[in-house]
Length: 95
Image (cartoon, rainbow, N blue to C red; front, side, top):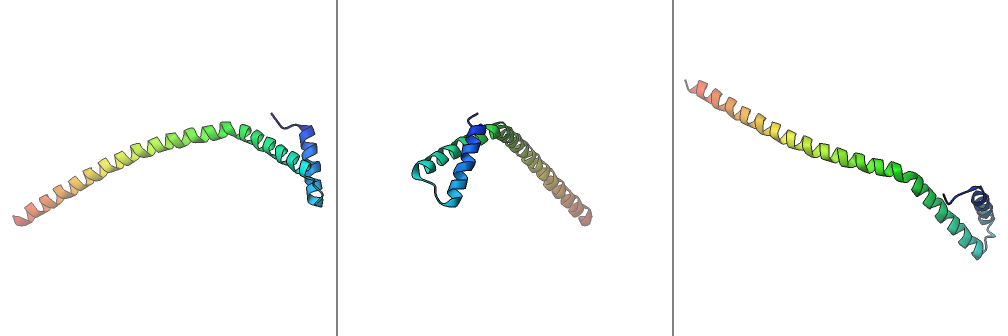
């Protein structure tokens, strides 16, 4: 991990200096570097969760494709049964 207690203390000190409006350019660069380290650590910490979420999205996408195909098949069955019912009704009406 890039982040540690020393970096955390330095980060807080630089943020306080920034809030007072007295941050120098070298301090601004150091603060930017510390922010990059913090962002990288957060990304590392989130990576397993993001990978798990991506796997779940892929799983759900696959299930949606399967369910969409099933819904289309059921819609065709319903349409066919409605057609048969109409034909049967017409046949009985003509008798």
